[in-house]
Amino acid sequence: MGLAYVHRMNAHEESPLLSVIDGVALTDFRPADESSRTPLIFVHGGLHGSWQWDSTQRWFADAGRRSISLDWFAHGGSRQLDASEWLRRSILDVREEIGVAVAQCASPPVLIGHSMGGLASLAYAATHPSRIAGLVLLAPVVPERFAGAPVELPIDVDQPWGPPPLDIAAHLFFDGAPAAEHEAIYAQLQAESPTAVWEATRWTATVDVDAITVPVLVITGDKDELTPVEIVSSLAEGIGAELVILPGVGHGLPFDQSWIDQCARIDSWASKILNEVS
Image (cartoon, rainbow, N blue to C red; front, side, top):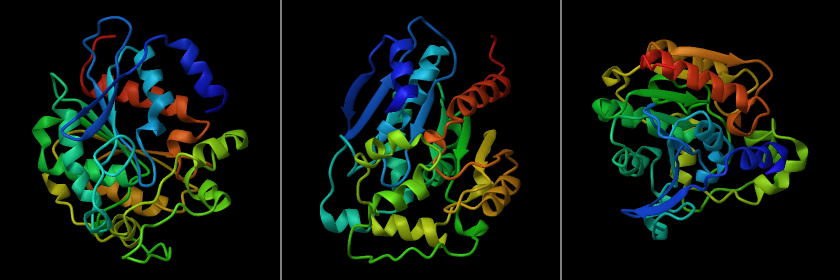
């Protein structure tokens, strides 16, 4: 997708290892040389798939980190669900797929989630704190404890939601990407569980955030209309996380032109909190 994507492809010659384990499609990027750096697990947002992390994973492979991204069930190459199960599937259910990815790591990884994937990652950290080394939340959907005003998207709970038309999708999900990339990104979006969209817009999911014991980094943009900076900041304060607010940035952090700076910040933070030797 676009020049940044081509650049990462040229910069890193290794192809990812693709596998399906327990019904979960995994994309595993490994550095060209052996490295003892802590691995990363990437969890995509609603309507998206592991493809959203391609450039990000290539950057981290070049930086010497192994990373694994996953497709939620009913997304990408993962196991499909029958309609009745999928329509009722909660964001919190994605903990199952996260657990499969985490199990592929020899040591606890840093878990990184975007949007709905941020909420799923937060929930996983609350229920399995000993299995991860750290948590990074990018423009996360927040649990009900930190709820703000509802995002009034129309939702029929008996019908798949979206994707909305290209102009609306671009505004909501990838406004920071170069305009030339919008159609390519949009072509990869898919419809989403209306239950998950309801949780993400009405802030109804319950997570015991007091059970989180790992270090947390939260990154969000001050122009985000889906997960407004006020409620994300409240979540960060409530869980004692380090908070980074990016000026002029919307919801689609992995697609924003600041994505390389985000990667560098995450890499530096992880090295510091894990006492990694450069």
